[in-house]
Length: 301
Image 1 (spheres, one colour):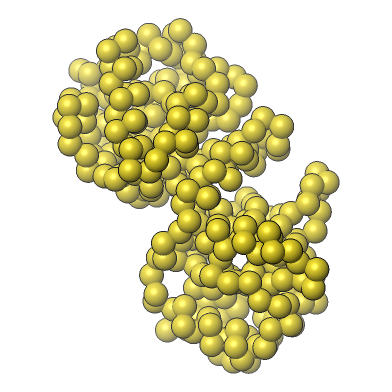
Image 2 (cartoon, rainbow, N blue to C red):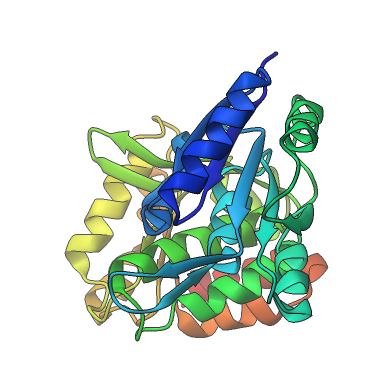
C-alpha cells in the first residue's frame, strides 16, 4: 500500500520541494501552503498516513498567529489514524515542542530533515491504525477555543470537536461520524451508545444525535423541532438528541424537552456551558456517570 502524506507549511516553495522529494521516493504526497484553510477541513480531508506540519504557520487573515498546536486537535478529531511530525525552526522553544507532543504529535524534527528518512517514516505509518491520543490535553485546549471572542465559525467547529473528543473519552460511547447530510438537515455528530443503566434503559436508544451551536441566540422551539426531526431520521425506533450550546435554552425549548416526545420514541436533552465545564473538568473515568446524572435531572424536571 502506498503511503499518503500531507505537507502543511506557509511557504509554497518548501511545500512543492518536499512533495517532489517524497514522490521521487514512491510516496503519494500532497500539500497545503495556506495552513489557515486546514482549520475548515473535516474528516473526509484527513485520509493520510502521515502529516508533516510546520511549527509556526504565519498569520491568519484576522491577524492572529497560527501554529501547529492549533491544528493538531483537528487531526486528533477528524483523522486520528494520521501520524503527525512537526517541523521546527532554529529558535523553537521547549514549551512549543512539549505542547505538540502533548497534543499527539509523534515527534518534532528540524525543517531540513533528510527526505529519505521522511519517506521511511511515511511508509512505516501505513496500516498502523489509530494511535492513542492525548485526549485530555486536546479536550482542555478545545474548551479554551470555544470562547466567544474568537471567530464564530471556528468557535463552532471547536465546540463540535470538543464534543467528539469528550464522547470518545467516555466508556460506552463511540463517535460514528460527523457532518452527516440527511433530508432533515445535517447531523453534526452521530454517536453509538452501548450503555445500560437506569437512564439509558428508559431511553432505549443505541444512537445519539448531537447538534452543536456556539452562538448567543438561545435554543428555541424551532431548534427543538429541527433536532427532533434529525433524531427521527435514524429510524422508526426513535432515539436521543442532544443540543449542545454555550448558552441557555428558552422556556419553550425546556417545556418541549420536558414532554420528551416519548410517544414518538424521541428524547431531547440540552448541554449548556455549565454542563460542558463540568464534563471537561471531570476525570475521564467518571464522565459517562456525570452525563447520565445530567440527563437524569432533566428527565425529572
